[in-house]
Picture 1 (cartoon, rainbow, N blue to C red):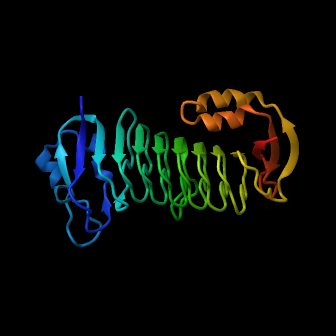
Picture 2 (picture 1 turned 90 degrees about the vertical axis):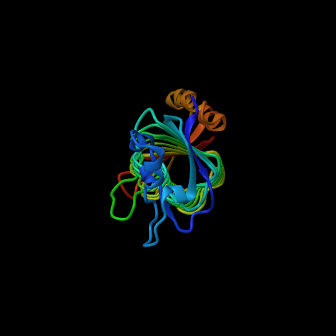
Picture 3 (picture 1 turned 30 degrees about the horizontal axis):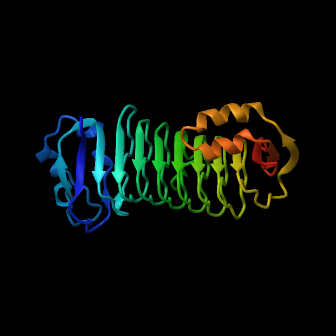
Amino acid sequence: MKPFTFTLRQEPPQRVDLSALTPDRLAGKSLADIEKIEIGTTRASTKVGDVFKLAEGDLKSVRYEGGSARFDLIGAKLLPDFAIHVEGDVGLQLGRLAKGGNITVSGSAGAYAASGNEGAHIEIKGDVGELLAAPLAGELAGMSGGRVVVRGKAGARAGDRLRRGILIIEGDAGEDLGSRLIAGTIVALGKTSGRVGYLNKRGSLVLAKRPEIGPTYIDCGPHVLTFARLFARGLKADSEAAAAVLSAKLQRYGGDTAVYGKGEILTPA
């Protein structure tokens, strides 16, 4: 059965909050009811019907035909067993606090994508802005589960305060990748810069291209890690290149010894 579809009529006149348009929140509503939902973020009214043309379909899956950098909070608090696909770009906080399900974006995403993600599988085929999977101001931890795959580049401080889950970045990563990492795994296949793994407590950073490692990391030598190879099998469906890095002999650096120090940076030996 075809998915429930939102087709973009025109670029919205302001940033819009699309958190109300997840499949579970749309259940039981008529097309007329959905068109009247207020999505504007300023005093000027903007309703769903002003921006989208609707087509009924299976509410297990929602599809956006056309995207915009003004589309904020798509897939917020998404529940397991539901899916959202966006044919185009999206704005801020994609998949914010998602409980599960699948979110796919054919274009790029703005800042704070996967912030607070608890279990969703999120794939971004373009680039992503800064603070991927990071907490909002005042929050103590970032993403706490799930998996995020970015096919392009990531902005600064991707994985900041990551608590649990997996990030795969196939392009370059901005400054301070994995800053204040609590736990979880980040795999970066492109170039990295800045203070990689700054204040990492017990997370794993897997870097295909070795950067300058900070002085608070200890060189533990080359290893053939059985667990890394088993872990690679689970990543192969999402990124064969990431799986290939984990399957090889790895140089391990333990740290960050400036804090708890149980984390690590792994690079090809």
